[in-house]
Amino acid sequence: MIRVIFILAAVFLNPLPATAFPIDAADETGIERLEGYRQAQLGNVPGNRLFQGARLYSNQISLALPERSFSLPAENRQLASRIVALLGDEADDYSLSMLDISDPDHPNLVHHNADVLRNPASVGKIIVVLALFQALEDIYPDDIQARERILRDSMITADAFIRHDHHKVPFWLPERMRLQKRKLAEGDTANMWTYLDWTLSASSNAAVSMVIKHLLLLRHFGKAYPVTVAQEESYFAQSRTVLHEDILAALQEPVARNGLDPDHLRQGGFFSREGKRRVPGSNSVGTTRELMYYMLLMEQGKLVDAWSSLQLKKLLYLTQYRIRYASSPALKDAAVYFKSGSFYKCVAEPGFVCKKYSGNKLNIMNSVAIIEAPAGAPGLRYIVAITSNVLRKNSAVAHQTLATRLHALLQSLHPVHASQQ
Image (tube, rainbow, N blue to C red; front, side, top):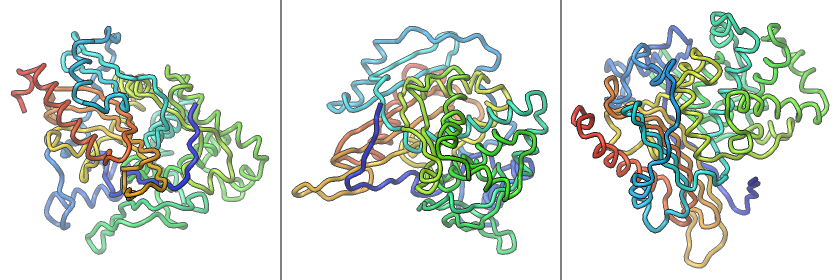
């Protein structure tokens, strides 16, 4: 288990907003900022133009392995050697799991240091969203419309649980025909879909903390949710012991129930300082093996159920500003389903200047992605999960470089598919 104690630290998770969910889904979800991005593609709003690979519509996003009997193959050790060579002298500081399903009848599997435990940082937000979809299915097992109603019609107002967060989230201002990007503030109200979107697209710690708060309320009140402010306050007035047990159950039980190992993939609690103060949790851990398996189960429709898996995939669809691994120019025409997270820690060192993603004490960078290239008619499909702790080097640039090299390697394995791009 890993418990990270910061000496001199800064946390930067997705410093600029990146949007997820296809932009034609504003009416379906009530995520208002999607309309802003749609208008930008029409030239009615300045900036915010999308890469070719980010222009899929909702009906073009599907699960890669639905209702398919699929077993993980034996590791391809020859391919593993080639991928480890891409990491160079720093290979020991990387963990990587990759599953190439371009030809699902002949998949390629690679693991390198795949069971090394690292703090998942913002990648842990995919566990929170899984837990929410599991709670919805538990309450409404045979009623998807009821789940959709909760997601669209339940309104969440940011409160003290968001304190404090530096991430900006996008707001659509239709009367001014512009997108505004700012920090989430107490009093901001939006539906649950929007908070999920802010959680994964902008990687907002404030947004995910409100999602966790309402996950606890949803599990406690069941079909009586949404509840009044008085009922919320009564719930959170319980003892810290009770709340501790509740949050562990809320976040960790769904992991095990969906075939994942909580000892190797776990979100321990809130992402905000205030949330942690009010509801004590545990530590968070992740391995590339379990992160890759999470994405595989999603592609098979086995995270909760097929409907939930598809919604999760749409929420992870990356558009607009691509960062870190996803910023590789080689992926410009690819559909990328992505989450990343990082934190670094610096200590005094002669001649060393602490910079973003370049810690000298700790320099964690995590990336998990599904790549479909080209978008809309993929010849190449693969899942990759990477964690690294390379000190004193810009890990965002390192992951971008690795993405370019890995994509080229997979193109060489599938020359017919690569020629379609």
